[in-house]
Image 1 (cartoon, rainbow, N blue to C red):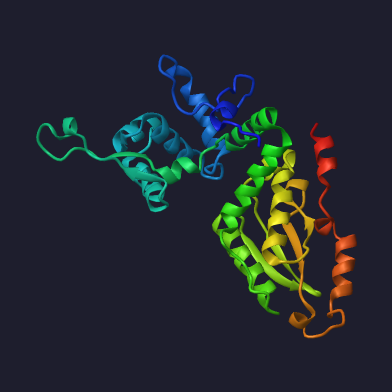
Image 2: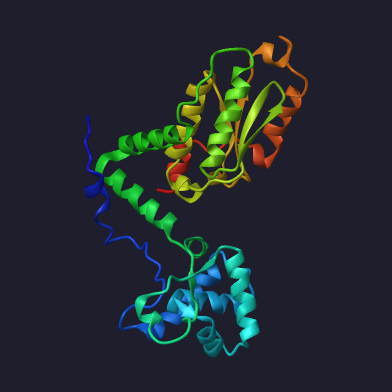
Length: 294
């Protein structure tokens, strides 16, 4: 069996560009403003007012920092600074820094200092997709397609967990619902709905869509594990990685679950939607995706 060291596979990224500068670099603080401006503007604070974005930038570059220092730097009144800091605190994007010993010297209570919280940093621009794609390329270079497929399979199973069904007439739909709940907990915003003679698992968000566009093995592994857990063939109708608005997987239900041995009402409509709706078109096959990204 092929054995590959994850450390060896991920250690060398000299030929990939995966780093976005955040904050000042020692000895190069003069250029920090333009770097963090880009990070703040392109991240989760992109829709904030210009002034609040500047407050965020200061908390990022100079935090912990006092409210008076923020006001002096940006030319804001004390009330203006307080208004922006209150919003950031209320949203959980900023926090009051712990007081250090040197701040406690002298009389009076030391001024509060503010900094970005962990949640606030999560809203900033990141290069996670670039890093993940570079890591996957290194894995393929070291271990070939086999290790990519193995990784994709283990990843899906880690999300689905120990979900299984007992083979009852209602088990497939119930299991599909539990799969959707597990996907939602992993950030996929999934749901299920009855359509025609089956149920569809709809993933309205895909945290790894940019990586899956180059590595369709991630999508293939989902479909394979869904089929195994549900105990039936499933059909992937659309994927976000392929440009669709959602990842949609159709799961046929046993005749007893639909209440009749004949095709359930709406089956013809499902077939029509699958053929005519752009969002319901079957995702491109693995070979085609590999050729497109070669």
